Length: 275
Ligand code: BTN
Image (cartoon, rainbow, N blue to C red; front, side, top):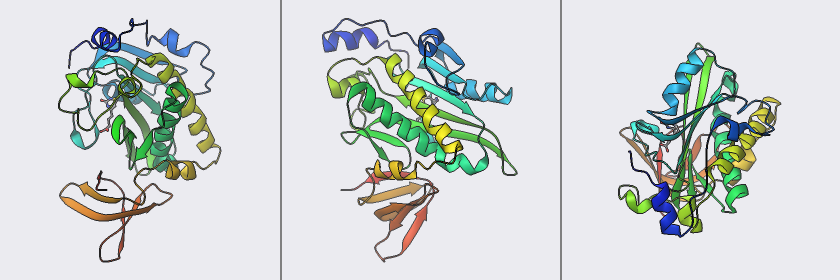
């Protein structure tokens, strides 16, 4: 994906494109975090922030190191899907070294950080579609991918990858047009990517440190889910479950009531909302 969207987007929304640098200096200036974003590595263009983050984590980069890019040429999503990351979007990965007990909470922390930061910066009200899609008006505005190296119950590293559609002109991407949205499309004006990235790092820092201090973010995460109470199909490889998404467990798994009344616990999968 090599299209430049900034200028097109500006024309479409009838405003002058303002400087929206994601340079480490701009991101870290008076950021006020304790861990996340103390070190930021920026690329104008790279294959995937997950790749660079993995290399950095293998070298034991400082916890909280952030890899951010203006554009990814081989962005990847869950379930081996391609993730479109043109200019105008946000693509970043955060390196963490949590203990294994915290792994299920990382997706909750990342999802809530995205929800809170979009709310603060734009006033929009995103919701979480289990397990880790962030929706506005029932369309996907952000995807989250967590990749961890775990051996014998010891976490080598966890990398949280977050892609946010900020100033995307969706008409340029017919393949995702029916299911995706962007902050600019929702608001009818461009949004500062820098503001979103900075707020995202602040919220992730707060939530992660709160978790490490023994706090629970389960209730806030559960209440942000658009999925609960809905009729859904969950696909995982060749397996498909259908039923009502009744609840989520503290470990993040989805409790699905099937037509025969049985409740299945689903730990991963791709959800389609049917109502
Ligand atoms: C999904 O919804 O399938 C997850 C998408 C995750 C995309 C982000 S963008 C930053 C990081 N780098 C990648 O290649 N993927 C993640």
